[in-house]
Image (cartoon, rainbow, N blue to C red; front, side, top):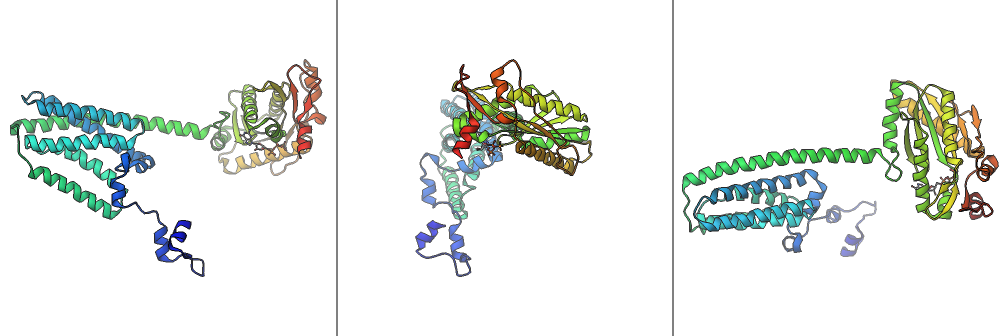
Length: 441
Ligand SMILES: Nc1nc2c(ncn2[C@@H]2O[C@H](COP(=O)(O)OP(=O)(O)OP(=O)(O)O)[C@@H](O)[C@H]2O)c(=O)[nH]1
């Protein structure tokens, strides 16, 4: 917008704040001029962005490549039966260029690949006409296919000009026919049929391959969508899917887990260490969940454990077990320090429900309220909100840490919530990260 404004030296907006129609037209990204397009360094003929955007076009290119390879190979096989060496040599080069084009295409050099396909094809078609006096039908088919894909993103005018050039090329090759070698009509007919079969077989093979690749890609996308990249826990998207599925099957316990004073870890240790803590936290939580439970990362330092269960007592114990798994043993950081981390957990339970549309958000909301209640009460504890429609706290548990480590058990409890940092093997130098956190504020 600014560019238009500067270029025309006047404000493109009228008094009502609307842009004049002519200016609106100017702001639309227009394809560059024809000479710019034609002379575009190695990138000519510019289909890169188009192919990147559209996977289907990418596949279309691949089809053209493979069918043209079939065409090369087919002619090579047939012409080698003839006594003329030149067409055979041309085909060998054509085949090699085509293989190189496929390799380039698969490596992501789409334009270079296309160029490697189209240029030898055009040369071959022209020589075909010149030497054999036979219409290079297959070559033209591929040239035209590549050509039309390439000019698709251009303006209407440019498309017209380039189509005209292609027509001139074709007419030129027809006009300058002066056959050197003579191939019988029967032979060329047979050659065409064999070529068609070979090309069709190549296309069929590639179609299967492309289908398989698309399936794998789809699986990869889905896996990425369902998993958090940092921790490997299920994503927020998967949380909805899994929650709905579990609720249909029976009762569901929702444990909302939030790391206490996580910001202080980031602020004092850096984000990389914060990430490390999240990863180890996930591993510990997973280790202490049952096989049928699912751990999801809701966002930031907030996790949700979905536990299929009707048993409220059991859920409370599960939450307590998770709490202890985190606060009873310090985290060993990559910078050599030991870090005490605590979490707060809110628990809710409900279901089964045929439709999870309303119950799941309600369970998540109640668990969230309970978790915030745990935060308000001093953190490092479990709070449950069993009754629907209320965020009333029905029970609070503050577990004690493992008695085997006295320095660690000192840290737990309501008075010593949040984090504690300690240099390795030094209990004297222990320092509460919460203190650091409070100082920083
Ligand atoms: N390292 C790291 N930090 C994150 C990530 N996602 C969110 N955070 C940080 O997590 C911190 C969350 O801070 P707060 O929401 O204030 O929560 P808190 O410090 O844990 O405080 P309480 O929850 O009240 O105990 C913010 O500083 C975020 O920048 C992440 O993927 N990696």
